[in-house]
Length: 276
Image (cartoon, rainbow, N blue to C red; front, side, top):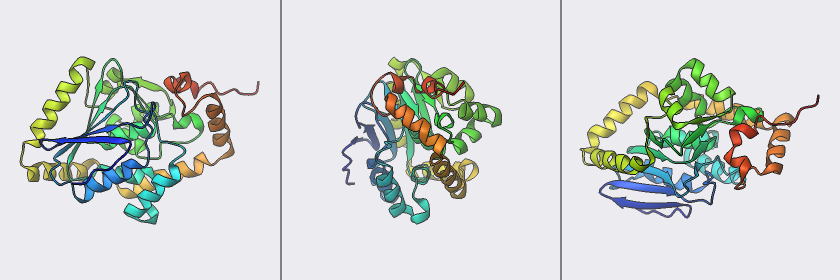
């Protein structure tokens, strides 16, 4: 198995591939994810379980790298065809890789970062440090990379609408209570719990594990058509003048830069000035 992902550090041991996102302070979702997903989908080799975490204690992944959208959409298109040129379709492919995927979340997972976690088979989070959110409604858009599909299925109608249209931050305890994640664990226990679970699953015959994942996916995973529809809607909404104005305003205050705005993005998207 060849691993060459500059912003994703990997280590394989006992069938468990640790994939640590290491793309600067904010851990923005970028182009290296394309090659990792392609590898897992096409030829995982000895990999039985993948644990995705972050090198930052403050961010699992703040959101997508807004400067790299053309690159990762081009990579997604190459992998799945011209109609699949979106992060949503790349994450849909991640949800179908023939291994078990676990997101281990410390810090903030918002926008595409939260959608990356949701595309994994399981999500475990630090009770003290994890924050989840889909801030897109605050810019005039909607989650376009699977957030709508996953949250509607996990949270139910009313809570999914709350999570999406409020564009607010949700702590790990609330996320657990809502069904957004599997469990919120004390930070000191998170690593050990995930390591034991991943090692346990990796020790089982892979054929049964893979069959179980396919069966559950058949019952619960959104279709590719739904994912494509959300991506098209997102792309049309984000191009509207009001959305561009809001994104430009956030960029001017520090969007995609380490600092107060990114730390409190759920609050910041509601602070857009309006004419009185």
